[in-house]
Length: 199
Length: 174
Image 1 (cartoon, rainbow over the protein chains, first blue to last red):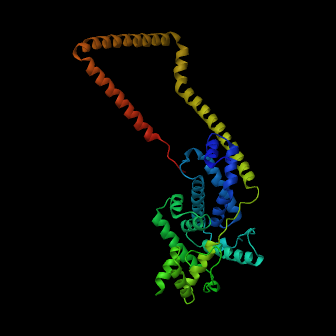
Image 2: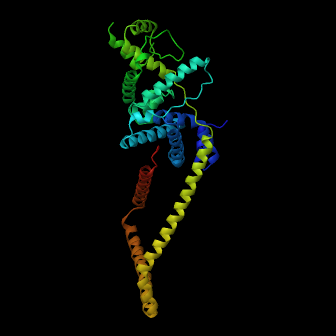
Image 3: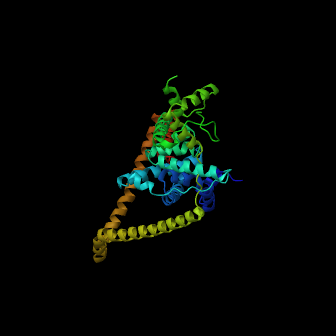
């Protein structure tokens, strides 16, 4: 089994096969980040492919002491943040963005169809809510909860300090709760799987 | 307990002790704003990765191939522009000189000979001066001093090389 560093070194020496293996390994991570950031499958695929292309072009600048995933996600996050900022200048409103449906693929691990339906509904609500966040806060939230990154990793990925990440996550959680549908504001009922530690 | 600590616990999203959890549960029954944070935190914690669409890597390879073709085309175009530009400049600058030289070959052969003789003579004079200086200085400066000066020179050269290397080292990251 060849590890990432060996593949990166092979790719740095011109092996396209090694780079393709890296693409196959990280495609879902990069695609998911782009999808959560941009909210549209087509834009997400384009952004994810652009991320890999930029990684390929700048492979000689990759520091092997850093995890490859962090480096890739950093490129993807900055690309998506730029794209969102450009979109704002193009005067595309958030309402227009929300018109795009966010398709959720079925979860193979889901035990019951009704649980899966609830989960999908919840995820769609969450996708709608995170689209209203500032682009950097959005990236921080996606990296924290979809990619299980630590605050230090998020700081490294987004070129922020750890305290700035903490403050952005804090603010983003407050905003998300504000955007959460009012009918959902029911008192919590017992502990659920994947429950927040703050319960 | 008032509302503030519960909200802070939820917004920090940190692990709670058993006692804190029980207190929070009681508070959530009476506080809709904390319940909203708790619900959205729950949704965040049950987030799943959305897999990349089928054929993503193949489409990337096609995009990479297109990029390579475009790069090759830019290289060819750049080379053509450089060659044509260089030839134009050469023709403009050197054309006049070449034309004049072709019109009167005797003049430029004479000028070239004078330059050649001047260069050879200058080298000979410099060589002679250096030899005399070395012969006379040898009597004034001890071998130890020569060694110290030489080592100092080598040290300075090394320091210069290291500084240049550090300055030009490629920056990491994109």
